[in-house]
Structures are given as C-alpha cells and as structure tokens.
Image 1 (cartoon, rainbow, N blue to C red):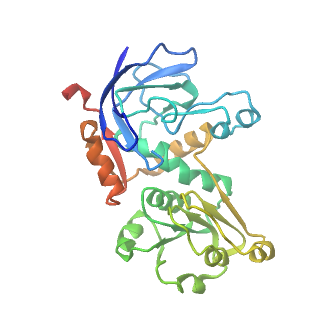
Image 2 (tube, rainbow, N blue to C red):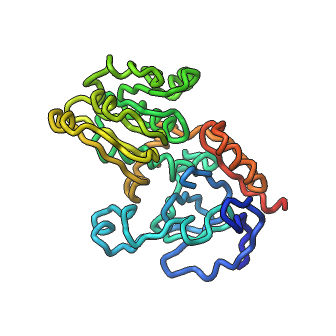
Image 3 (cartoon, one colour):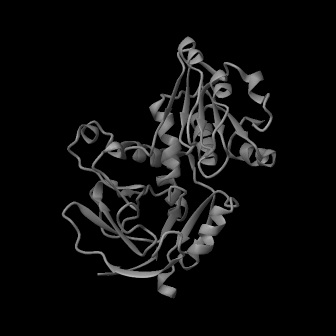
Length: 306
C-alpha cells in the first residue's frame, strides 16, 4: 500500500510530499487512517472505522518487567511513532494495537491528538504523585503543556497556582482554571510562598532557580519536571530536612492514558488548538517555533485535496 506523507529529506530541511510503502500489518498491529495529527515539541481489540488515538509510543515488548508491571511507556525495547520509523504526518500509520486507544464518544477527534502527547505528559504526574483534591499545586509555564495541566488539576479539585514570566497570560490562566497567578519574572515572588505547594509541576523548557522552587514546597512535597530543562542544580539539605523530592516522567502507560481519556470525557476537557491543513505543515512548524502557538497545533489531513 502506498502511503502519502510529508517528510524532511535532510536535517533541518522543509517537509515535502513523500510516498512510501508501509508494508504488511504485523499480527498485533492495527492500521489507522489519519484525520488529525497533533504537532509536539518533542514532536485493544478494535473494530473497523472506530476512532482511536495514538501518542508517542507505537510498540512495547509486553514481556519485560516494566511492561508486566503496567509501565509499558518505560519499556526499554519499545518503539516510538516518530523515532527510527515513518511518523504520523501522513494519511495512515501503523502501531501495535495496545497503543491505539478508542476515543470516548464525548472526546472531540479534532482536538484529541495533543492529549496523547502533552496531555498524558501532565496527567501522569497527578497519578504518580497521588495528588489529592485538597492539594495545592503550582504549574510553572502556561504553554502547550501548562494550559492542559491547569485544566486537569482544576477539574481534579486542586487549588491551582499558575506561574509565568508573561503577565499577559494571567486572564487565560484563570480561564483554564487557575485560582492564583504569580509573575515568576519577579525574583521575590516565591519567597512569600515558602512551604505552600504539595507539588510544583514544571512544564517550562528553561533552567530555573531550583532552590527557590524547592523552598516553596510543603514538607513532603514534590518538584516534578516534564519540561526539557537542561539540568537541575539544587541544595541538598532542604530536600533532606523537608523530605522533599525531585522527579520527572515521560508519557504514561496504557492504563493511565485510558484513565485520562475517561477523565477528559467526564469533565469536558480539551486542549486549546490551532488547526492547519497538513499541506501547510512547514508553516505550522514555523508558527510553533516562533512561540506564537496557542496552545497546541493540530494538522488536518487534506491529502485528498492535493
């Protein structure tokens, strides 16, 4: 079967129309017709015609200790959709059936794509850290990840504080569900919030004054990083004295992805997206690189129009 797609033929090159043979389906794979595909910075038993979502991972081995304990996303032998194989900037993609998730009826397929990458990335820490509705959680960065984190935590029942270097995002943060907004550009902002947060979820892709954020954690609190900061340099004693910890995580496993989808359907949560036809993929990537995307970009399959 000939697949229509877009691909860069050299590092840093523009994406151009590209056709290839996908090959036969493996015994445990399904074939997905692409209608919408989310763009990211990182960039089951199914019936024919069923809407499904596919995220970062496309396959896991199913027999290692990680898979057998439910952490398929941490499988060392797993395969990713876009690493070492053709990705989903196309009209079809193959994946192991385990990683194709049926969409609940209340989930909008036009905006669902980002849930399977950025969405599960910020939903996973809520599950991992056993966040309770009575907890006070801070979200650092209001972008593609952060705006979904605020929506999740608000619906979870938490008191939510948004931190951003851009004060113009305060109104939007409140619309997403934030109870408080702090301008993190002010170096004294966190000093008045010592021992305040049960978790600080860092979604920003920058290095921070880590000691200040650790000081803002309550005893037993967790500094959880999902943004691509280059390194963490922190003073150890406050971690020991307050039984505080630093951690991070990738996407979640299949069970947590299904839980996220059910939660989104129940609370009518969807990411804020901008839609581009896939024929304008380079324009969409330039828009993403400019930092002007609000807040995730979705590509619409328009191959039939080419």
